[in-house]
Image (cartoon, rainbow, N blue to C red; front, side, top):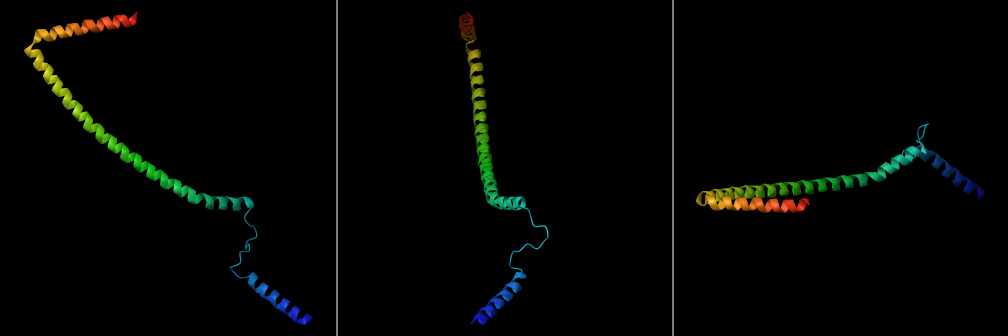
Length: 126
C-alpha cells in the first residue's frame, strides 16, 4: 500500500511541475517584481477610476444644466429689457405731449419737486 501512495504523490508532484509553467498561473515572470507601493497605486487607480468617471458625468450634467439656465435667463432678460425700452419711450412721448399742452403746469411741478427734494436732502445732512 505505501507504494501506491508514493506513486500517487509522485504523479501529483509531476502534474504540479507541469502546471507551474502553465501561462494561466500568475507567477511573477520577471526578476524585478513590482514593489508593494506600485501594486497599491495600481489597485487604488483601479478603485478610483469608476468614481472619477461618475464625477466627470455629474460635472457634465451640472454644466449643461447651468448652461441652459443661463441661456433662459439671458432670453428673459432680453425680453424684459425690450419691454422696459418700449415703456420708457412711451413715457417720454407722454411727457413731451404734456409739456407742450400745459407748459406752465409742468414748470410748476418741476419747481415743486426740486424744492421738496432740497428740503429732504437738507434734513438728512443735519
